[in-house]
Every structure is written in structure tokens, then in C-alpha cells.
Length: 109
Image (cartoon, rainbow, N blue to C red):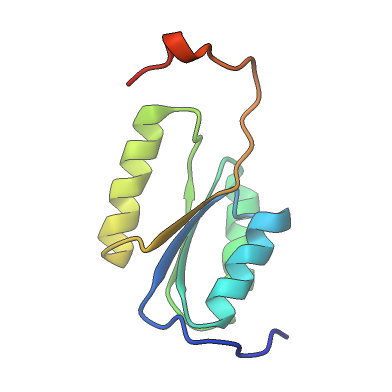
């Protein structure tokens, strides 16, 4: 049980990689303080289990299957998050992306 330290009622947080580990811990902490939470993860089963955990805290929570390495998926999931929650006040970029890094001069705008 997390003590009520401050009031985040009416706030909305988006947490990538929010279906386990540090991301889920962050989501629980925020939800326990009244924050609405949207978690994104690539594993639908883990998303569902995390959603069950988060629903005990009361505020509206949602979970989307989203690969943050895919720009189109991110745009689509962000629109869905806005449709569900109305806005996003904070984003916690917790998801890990594997692979070789892109050179700065080759990054997409």
C-alpha cells in the first residue's frame, strides 16, 4: 500500500513500458495518488495483468499494445490515449528499444 503523499486527481500520465518492472511501479505510484494512467507495452498479456493491478487504485486506467520503435504505432496509440483520457499531462519514456542506434545525421525529423 502506498501512502497518499499528494493529490494527482485530474492528471493523466502516459507510461511506455508500463506493464512491468519500473514502469508498472511508476504507474502504481501515480494511480495511487489519483492520476489517470495509460500504459503502453508490446505484450498484450502483460498489459492485461498490469491493467488488473492498476484498476484497484480507482482512477481511469488504460493499456495499449504499442511498439514505440514504430512511429506510426506511436501516433495511433497517442490518438487512442487522447480519445480515452482527453489529454496527457506527463509522459514517462520507460520502454527499452533494442538495435543499433541511428547516427544523428540520419535521424528522421
